[in-house]
Amino acid sequence: MTDRDWQEKLEAFFELRARQISEVPTLDDLCYLAGRNPLLWTDQNLLSDLKSHVLDLMQLDQTSKVLEVGCAAGLLASLIAPKVGKYVGIDLAEAPLSVARRLKLANAEFRKGDGQNLPFGDREFDAALCYDVFSNFPAFETGEKIIREMLRVVRSGGRVLVGSIPDQNEIEQSQQISARLAAGFGTQQSRPPLQTLVKAEKAGPLARLSNYLGLTDKDAVREIKPEIVSYYFSKDDFVQFGSRLQVETRIADIHPRNPYAGTRFNVIFTAK
Image 1 (cartoon, rainbow, N blue to C red):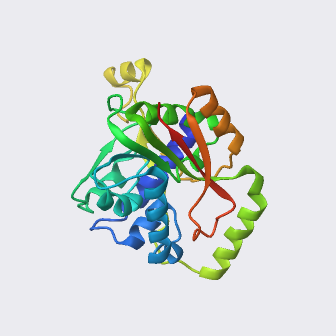
Image 2 (cartoon, rainbow, N blue to C red):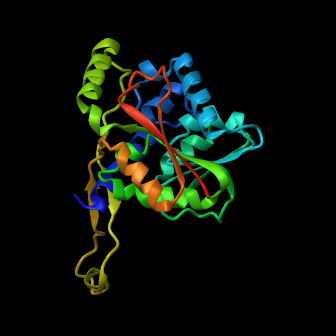
Image 3 (cartoon, rainbow, N blue to C red):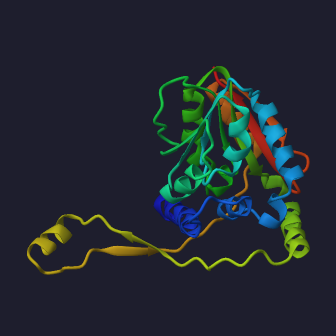
């Protein structure tokens, strides 16, 4: 699978789900768009546990300026933004961002952007996070540029959180938890099935010449099947990466109420 393949399938997943939400999103909508089971993640005690855990790990307060990479429709933003001074979320897909903007969070800004090339200057933020995103990457190297970029835009001493990473050493236990949760929560709210995302291809020189000569009057299009896959990672890869960057690196458990506690982990880097 090429980088283009998995990225396009992932973007299609979030894009098509976001298109199903036309009003101000409910908490159920935000969970659905994020790929989380609403029957689990609409539990206010679970969300409160996640919020306090992230705020503590990143040492955030009402004066903090925070960046989230891969914010999707703003589920985490709805928890974090009211507790900080300024929140900025970026994502590659536009449709989820339009849903996030409908939340009308007073101190939040949502922008389209690439985490591997952040559109911000050095040390603009007090902290940055990328939560429940790394699991979408088929290889560790895919996320390296994102971590480097987050460290670049965070002030010296500020924290970068890469969160909720599936542990490669706990695959079997994680799968058992997934099966148990699926059986325990039963059928989710009915939603229209996702179709395929139709994407126009940029015409190459030969195609443009053919169009010019009138040999074809159809634009080239591709149909992209939406897909989301959860990949597993080794804690050692993050520790070794932090060592290469010469930044303080700490591994921490995910928040204790999370049913996947013990099978996922957080990584906290401290910017130089």
